[in-house]
Length: 610
Image (cartoon, rainbow, N blue to C red):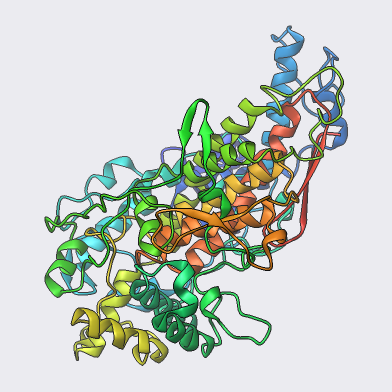
């Protein structure tokens, strides 16, 4: 009998013919098994493969509670009658149970549908790629990538072949920041391809996880760029001084008049100076701008941690002239370096937050928060199985080593998940590129570019004030090298933030009210009592939400290297990744538990193995 043939990508990424007889083997799942995966992966054979496995498995057994109970039982038969069991050669009951837990969680994850992956369309819209990420790839002019070089870049992304990445045509010695990390697989939680432009109900998320980023010509894009210009002008103003600062007042007034502004507003619909550059999750507009978890002194074992930081000297900004801008876009070192402020200070302004996140370990702020929560004697989550135990306390499970290690572990999974979105889906360019387009248009060179932003940024007061300060229309940067050499959307700091605060909410009581809150002085040299009328409303959950935006906005908005939407979407993605991992890990605990916590949208997530 003649076998039908279809085209597919094999494990090496090579196109070949397969027969109908091969379709049921893991290596031979066809491209037609899950059509949405083809659009999602954008040429990555490894990601197509995973998405297709989920569709192929739908004809088999879907494991329910009986299989989960069997995985945790002491029954040597291990899963008989439930569709999954240990290999026959496995005779040790514990090894068999371990296998069933792994196979059960892997099967459940593989059955999660692959959502649409929708971009903002700018890459296809502009032939010159002026709306697409191309930093460090050879440039032909301000805002213009060399198209042959860009094709070498896309060839590597589409193939996923490590050798093709070595043939990308760069403009200088600076290299691209880890694009192959987006192709890594994790052995816990949902795969990166399973998050996209849709809710993720399997991971308790009922909002869209990764919507398309605002397009270059949209009002939302222009508004985000206006916000970035204001943030650059306020880098050296203490957060506590915003309410009396004239520039902050002008920023609030202009952003209040922009319907597409995505930040919080007061009850009258206004952006006030006190609300500038804040996030909108529950608790974020309560208390000081800086989270208590960034400033309360703590201990790392016996090591004192006063939470003072060395930051960069005020008033020194970069990439405000055509020469250095173009050098940086080509990946050429300008020879300029950040100048340190010799005085250690508490985080109290935008430049300080930028300096901290310029060199931090990505989960550093959340590990520090874990230490501070212990210093503040915050109780564990009420669902912790050892609450009320007369004979035991948690340690390697539901105890301090588990708390600390899980915060670090989830950061790595989340980072690779967002790297997939950055490199293989969205390729959103950096704000410095958006500022360059504004500059070209306002200096009469806009005819060289295919992309034009909305008039709301071209007519912005912030852009004109920036020109007055720097003598050009570029968006000033806090770092001499500008942004990192990877695409903007979503952001690594944001996804790690969302993942790590979710872990801390899982382990600690998020409703605990933080006693004796403090606030840094306007020079950052000291901290003192916070005496605002809302001092008694500052909770752990609110400060964790605030911490996520402090760090991600501190890394992105104040230095000028990320858009607001980069952070907001990535925090949501990080939370979803963490929930997916916690759901998998629930089966690995011997303790029976049900833990609930409040998500960033104010709804409740529940993790249980009962």
